[in-house]
Amino acid sequence: GAVVSQHPSRVICKSGTSVKIECRSLDFQATTMFWYRQFPKQSLMLMATSNEGSKATYEQGVEKDKFLINHASLTLSTLTVTSAHPEDSSFYICSARTGQGYNSPLHFGNGTRLTVT
Amino acid sequence: AQTVTQSQPEMSVQEAETVTLSCTYDTSESNYYLFWYKQPPSRQMILVIRQEAYKQQNATENRFSVNFQKAAKSFSLKISDSQLGDTAMYFCAFPAYSGAGSYQLTFGKGTKLSVIP
Image: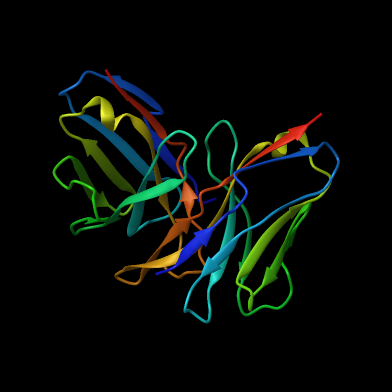
């Protein structure tokens, strides 16, 4: 149980275009999902917390207008990278937990490798 | 704010041997959980083990165990009988409150473990 599906796994786009990444909780409902970014050989950095039915909460330094997050249902959150530039190339990972408490582990999607040319 | 420190960027171990990865953290909380995640070359984040702070007994999951020293704020991971499939990045993680009753994870910088045949 507790499967998180992320799509696409890999995407290449041209500079200036937008890319949408989907994150789905397949066998549980997630009122909150988290979007992380990971640069090569580095740790995961939280970008934003996606809240079902309300606005996402962004971490300091993350551009809200560039990284649009929509959490339209209890099983789907999307991250749209708008007007992508080569510096946006990275590995993006979504995650969710089955419970709300601090004892509940995060379950991760397989990640999306974004390359902007 | 909680911080998580992994002081060993890289480690290696011979197959079938035992290796210990270190993690220290800082928090003012009295009750919490700690997690170790593994990220193999596929980049899928996999939960290895978790420890409840108010439990004195160290958590164990098959070949993986922790040495939890609450007073010292230390949470090391021991891997016994290392296998080639254990080759991965290992991240120590601590829950941080993200608002609206939800918790996200703060990750250490990771330790790259290589198991040598």
